[in-house]
Structures are given as C-alpha cells and as structure tokens.
Length: 386
Length: 119
Image (cartoon, rainbow over all chains, first blue to last red):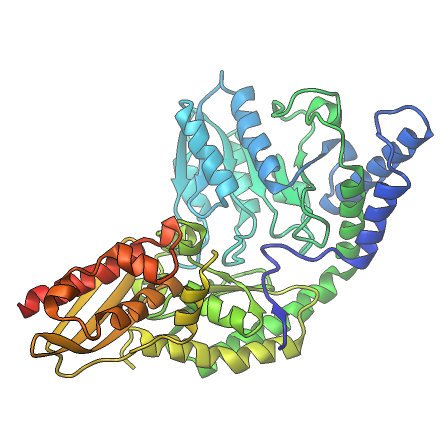
C-alpha cells in the first residue's frame, strides 16, 4: 500500500545532512561547551556557528538568539519571562483566539497568577485585525503575542502591521513563528518584533531543539535557573548536537526556500482544486488569504474529521484532524470556531500539511481515495442528506 | 487515539447501516458538546426487535457504538432492550477510552428514546 505523509505541520523527518551533523556531535565532538579543553572548545565553536546562522536567517545579531528545547519552551519563556520582568509596570497581556496551546495555556497560567489577558478575535478568513489589537491595548499592557502562521490553517497574520500599532505604544511584541520559520523569509527588524519563537522539528531538525529571538535589551526573566548557559537565560547543558542539527536544517531551508515554496504551492493548488472539483459541500479555510503554501485545512459538511482521518490512515495517508475530539477534548477546533466556521463543517475538518517529501503522485493518490471516503462517511451520516 | 480491535473492526465494517421506513420505533439523539448525532430505527414484531438500523455522524468510536448497539438489540424483546446500558455497549466494544465513553452514552440514549416513544 502506498504510504503518504501529509502531517508536516505536526513534525518532519530529519534530513540526511542534518542527521550527519547530529551524529557527529553525539559521537565525536560530544564535549560540553562549558568545558575549557579542546572537546569543550569544539562544541562551543559549533554552537556559536549555529547562532550566527540562525541570526543571519532572522536578520538579527547573534547575541539575540537563544537555544532551548523547542517552541513550547520559547513561548513559555517569553510570556512568563516578560510578565515577571514587567510585573511592576503592568499585568495585562494581549494575544489572539487562534494561538497554539503553548501560548493559550501559558496565558491561562498567568491569568491564575493575577494577570489579565485579552484574546482578540479573528475574521472569517482567520486573520487578526491590527485595529482590534489597538483597541485591546491599555496602559497596563506589557506584551502582545500573535502567531506568525496558524498551525491549523496556515493563515499568515499581519505581524508587521500589528507590531507597528503595539510598539507605537511602547509595548513589547512577540510572534510565535514556529510554523513559518524556515518556510519563508523572516526578518525581525522588518517585522518589528521584540521576540520570536522557533522550533527545529518543523524544519527537518530533530524534536527537542528550538529557541527564540529576544531583542537586545528587551526585559526578560529566565524560566530555568542553574548554569550560566545561554548568557544566563536558559540554564542547562546545551543540546549541542541538536543545535548544530538546527543550524544545518536552517542552511538547507535558506538554500531551498524559494524553490520549495513554489513547488509546494503548486501541489497545494492541485490538492485544493481536486477536492473542490470532486467533492460537494467542502470548505477550505482561508482560501482567499495569504497562507503557507503547505497547509490546507478543508472541512466536509455532515461528517466527522476523526472518522475521515482514520479511513485515510487505513489506506496509507497520514494527516491530522482539524477538530480536537481526538486529542481528548469534545470541543471542535478553537481556531475554526474563532473563524466562525458554520456548524455543519465544524466537526469535519482535516489538515493536510505538505513538505519536502511530498510529490505530485502523493497528491494524486489522496485525490483518488478521498472522494470515496467522504462519500462513505456521508452515507453513514444522519446529518447529511445527499 | 488508540482503539480496540473490535472498535476498529466495527468502524471498518459497520453493521446495519441505514434506515427502516416506516420504523416501529426510532429516535434521533445528539451530543451537542462533541457534535455526535445518532439516528436509530427499530422494527418490532410481537414485542420483539426483529431489525435495527442506524446512522451516525461522529468519530470512529461513535460509529462502532451505533453498529454494536444494533447487533445487541436484534432478537431482544422490548423489556430486555430497555436494560441495554452504556456499560454493556462499552464491554461489547472491548473497552472505550475515558474520553470516548460518551459514545456509549449516546447509544444508550438512542435506545431509551426510541423505546420510550414506542411504549
């Protein structure tokens, strides 16, 4: 049976060149960068080189780049770290209704500690309006956090416009760029952000590595205490091999960025046109809006996403549902609800996310089996009258 | 989400999918929290369920619960059918995970609602 992986927004395989780097720093150059002997020095140099590489990619000074375990740690560090650093100035944060749980749950945690959080809505395309952010700002606001690209829909947010509004008021701006990092050019000065989160395993580096950009001088307290690593901002012996692997993945992302963007965009269009032509009553989220070229969130009226996902899995296609029932909650996706997706579609969403390994033959296979699977689920459904 | 082999099998090959027109008893029940909807149709002759059909909009567990419920119902008299519980559905499915137990509740609701209207 053909195997098709369409869940690159969940995670990506490690590329061969990245694995090589990883193995070298596990097996040979395994030193602790805090050691002063040659093993340590070699590891230190490798980290410094990677820091330069990531800094280059973001148009930032190397001193502004910090490595940690991934996107969740980065988001926690920035939200909790700014809140701690500025609690004397104010205790209000602004974010959006469509953030990743790593932001939403951290905000909920801060709310329990006495902070107030405003969640700005999105329009029907899933876009945050900078004016809505402006209206949410108060004299107490210390940080605004809006994601760069939504993980469920791929919809891009107007971060530069939002940052302009936010920084006019002297407030700090963070963007969780985990899904966009490595897929498109991101320049922190053009965006006007003070903080930016990134993760390795969304761009063909291993799980367990990631980090953040913090504008030099921006107030931030560390989350982890211990050693002096990462200039005291992230204690704990560095995951040297992971950091080097991330650097290698960034280099490859930069090298192939334009080509992969265009290639995946063509596949995305092929997938979306095929679905719209062959299957009635479908709704592609954010279809008229700037999106990542790898993400298609498509909902089918009258059926349930997990059942579709499982039928696809039985035929070799791996992807995610756009609804959260499978992750233990009965509620449909908070992102689709925030967008006001109509009820018949709300439970029937699938997320197809493409990547470097996706081929036209993969998309054609999906288009071959998906109409039948949706048809079968609709035959079973009392909510769908054909 | 891990499912038992029985759930997997019922999901892949659901039994008694469809409608009975006209049915001797039927009910359309839903769980607004997760969006699951189940429509149950029964044919009852001489106080005994001789046929059962269902349609479900829901996750694999909800589909399997509908399927196994029709199997459990066929051949029972109305009083026996009224004793069908969520626990029995759960056991027949080889065990539902805690976040999927609500699918057996929906099946029990459908049976009770259909037979309540019948009696």
